[in-house]
Image 1 (tube, rainbow, N blue to C red):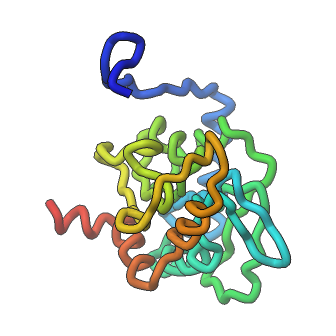
Image 2 (image 1 turned 45 degrees about the vertical axis):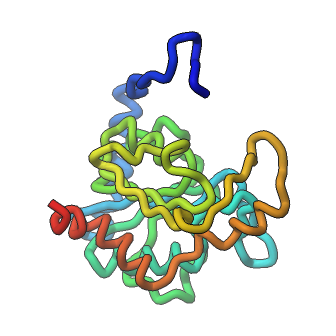
Length: 219
C-alpha cells in the first residue's frame, strides 16, 4: 500500500460524470413532480440499502451489514417529513409504509437507471445514503450528503474530508475489518452485523446533520 505504480501514495482527481440534456431534464422533472405533488420546497433522496440486501419473511437482511436498518429508515423518513422535506427512496424495491403513519407519501420511483438517479441527486436538496453507489453519485454531483456507515471504514469507501459530506460513523468504536471483497469471515460478520442499528439519539443526530444545525454550531 506504500507504493502505487511506483509513484507512492498520491491524491486522485475527483471523478466526473457528464449528463446528457435528456438525463438532466428527466432528473429535474422527477424532483419537481415530487415537490408539486407533496407541496414541498425541499427534497431528500435516501438510498437505504446496499447490494447485499435481501427480503426474507417480511424483513430486510443485509449479509454485509452496510444497509440502514428498516426500522431506522422509517424513523428517518418520519423526522424528515416533520421538518418539511419530501422524501424519495432510491431502491430496487418498493416499501409498504401503510401501517407506519407517515405524514406524507414517500416517492418510490421504479426502473430508474443510475444516470437518471445521478441527475435527480444533482437537483435534490440533500442525499442520505449508506456504503453504496448513491453516495458516489452525490459526491460527483456536489450534493450535500449525510452518509451512514457501520462495518466499513469511511476513509476507504467514502469522502470524510469532503466539505459537503457528513459521515455518521456508527462503527467507529466497535467494528472489525471484514474482507468481504476477498473472502467470507463469519466471525467478523457476526461481530459487525448490528453496527448499523441506530438509537433515537443517533436518528436525531443524523437529522440535525441534514438540517445543518451541527455544522452551524461547530462553525
